[in-house]
Each structure stands twice: as structure tokens, then as C-alpha cells.
Image 1 (spheres, helix red, strand yellow):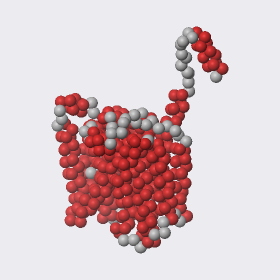
Image 2: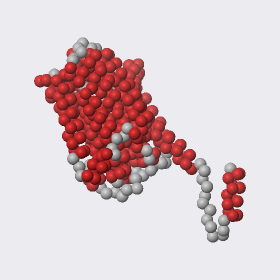
Image 3: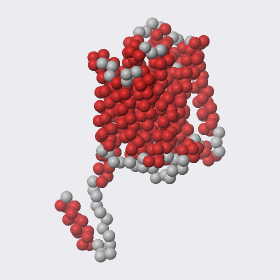
Length: 424
């Protein structure tokens, strides 16, 4: 410190009376890097907690069904509430992130998740429990819009968003085991109370980070932003990635257990298979993260979509448990690539198209939620007359047709766009 002051005095002696001396702040960049690193890990932690709470309700559904005497539709409503709420909140959350800043909205989402989680813990009736799930869905949708926007702006690195997918995978694995174990020994409310306390800690730590990285774009309106974003190839590719990943995830989650159950597999065995698939998902997302920006390309999305259609073939060829397990694990690996590439590709497209990053993140979460709500309903309509295997085959055909249409749409462009595609 003394040496730095001496150097500054020497500079002041050598410059002229009308010259200015620029202040020397040797540690400013290092401090900024530390803050960005802290923000990155805290956003990962918030993503992990949101996914943990999203999956934690699965082993508790029988207890809720018994306590409140629920019908099948009412039980399914507890699962669908998150996706429905996220469907409606994602785009408005993105627009608000662009208008008022993603930091404040992320902090609000953390507290919203805390209150919704406590509501689930102590809900005395089914309507209040459903309202708590809807509130959690709002917080969930805001987290995956505003928090990712905050991180991408502050770090100025789209590939940092890939880590949220890995963290989400860990949360999805830990959620059912965490909730089931704690509820068994400490009561139905205990898992949510513990999760709420952990979310409070994460949110308070995020409050101490005053690093906005706000967008420099002028507010041009949500409709104009969406119209501009829908013309960018990278954003369209990102939307295709999350739609394929979301729809395929919902489909295999619905069809896989049905085929395994028909083969005589127990509930515990099915749970182990899905845990193994989640572990494969984490490994795939970690490998994609290591690849960095080299993997964030439109060709990666289209290639992964083709592979996904192919790896569903074992479950359509045979109903043997081994074939279904191979399908579940293989599709999990491909989905990890799609998720890990989708958000960074969308962020890159937002920067190039000159639209708000929050609106683009909101668009991606909106189409994801729509895919996860619609695809199981459509598949459920086919299962009755066709069966699980034939429905999987229909899903393959639809996916293949969607990829062909997408490929043609990306290539039937003007010469300028064709040159642009070559770099994607």
C-alpha cells in the first residue's frame, strides 16, 4: 500500500499542472471477479433448491391423497400447478427483468419460494395446498427467468448458464430422497420447513451482492421484443431445444413407468431407474459445460434432436425392462445436452438481436412450460387405444417430423441468412 502511494506521488510530480492523473485501482477487477463467482454459485444453489422442491412432492403425494381424501385429478393438479404457473409468469417476469432489473426480481422470487414452501408445509386443506403449489410455480418460473438473466448479464458469459442445468439435476435427484426420508421420521411438514430455511440462507446471501449488470437496451415493449426475437436463428434454435427437452422429459416420465410396471417392476425399482437416469443427466450436462461455447451452436441442437429420436427406439422395439432402462438413460443424456445448450444459445441470440435478455429467457421458459403441460395430455390420449409402446413410436415420428420442419425452416432463407447459418 505504501509503495502504491509513493508511485502515485511520483506520477503527480512528473505530470504538468494541467494534466490529470487517472486513479489506480489495482484490485477492482479482482473484487468484481469474486462477486461474479459468488453470484454464480448462489444462482446455482437457488436453481438446485427450486428443482429439489419441485421433485420433493413426488414421494409425499400418497400422504396428501390420504390426508385430504383426494381424487386422481386433484393429485395430478398438485404436480401440474408448477408448470401452469410458470407458463403464465415466465414472459412477464422476463419483461420486468429488462425494465426494472433482474436482481430485485430474483430476490423477490427467493422470498416467494420461501413463503410458498411454508404454505405447503402447514396447509390445513387441499385448496390452500394447491394455492401454495401455484405460488411456488410462480417463484419457480421467475427464478428460471430472472436469476438466469442476472447471471448472464453480470458474468457476460452465456456458458455460465450451463451450470444451472447441472445444479438442477442434483436437485431433482436429491428432492425425492430428501423429502421421503425426512417426512418418514419427522413428519410431512418437516421437508418443506428445512428447504425453506435453506432457501432463506441462499436468498440472504444473494441480497449482499449488489451487482446488477443491467441491460443497456431501451425498453421497446414485450410484443416488439418477442417479434424481433422470433426472427433470430439462435433464439429459435434455443426454443427448439427447450421444447424438445421439456416434451421428451414429460413423455418418458409418463411412458417409462407404465412400460416398466407392465413388465413387473416394483415402485422402488422404477425409482432407482429414474435416479440412475438423473445421474446420467448430471454427467451429460457437466461434460457439455466443459465444452463451453464450442457446444453452443444451432447444429448441436439439431444433432441432439436426431439422436434423441433414435435413442427412443429400444422402448418401441421391445417392452423388456432392459430396453426401457436403456431408453430412459440415453434420453436423459441427450436432454442434458439440449438443456445445457438451449439457455446459452438463447442468451447469445438476445445479445445479437438487440432484444432484452429477460424477455428471451421468459420466452424459453414459456415454451418449455407449454410443452410439459401439453405433451403428457396428448400422450395420455394415445395410451388408451394404442398402448405405451405404440405411443412412444408416435412420439418418435412426431419428433422426427418436427426436426425436418425445423431444418427446412432454418435453411429456406435469404442468401444473407444462409451465410449466417454457416456460423451456427
